[in-house]
Image (cartoon, rainbow, N blue to C red; front, side):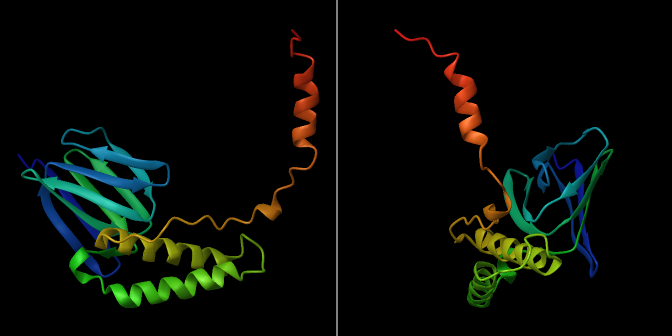
Length: 168
């Protein structure tokens, strides 16, 4: 069938130009799928795997942040990063991921510091490459929960709910 034109463009140029049957892309709000005849759409991309199907064969590539524009039967992906499985050099990726994870674990600055956010984005990119390769790292949650103040929230809820409890 292959009625959908998929084009992936990075600052270095066109990285993928294929006629495909279907595309599934990672957006900031979760994955979305595109088939031929899709309504026009613009979506912000997140770092992750881009899946496309052509002639019954599914292919995955890794993309960075950017935008997807769907118009007619064309899916245009503008992204800052792109890599295919065969271009991944696993050992340097794992070594760099270990370095980045160490920096994030020792981070003592503000959670929204641009330097930290760059490290988080790099960590996501490295982990996505390993996922594409077929050997993803274990999931991690590094958000700084110390910034949230939960004091008094639970006791207030418990006090409000006590009046609704029936004794029997």
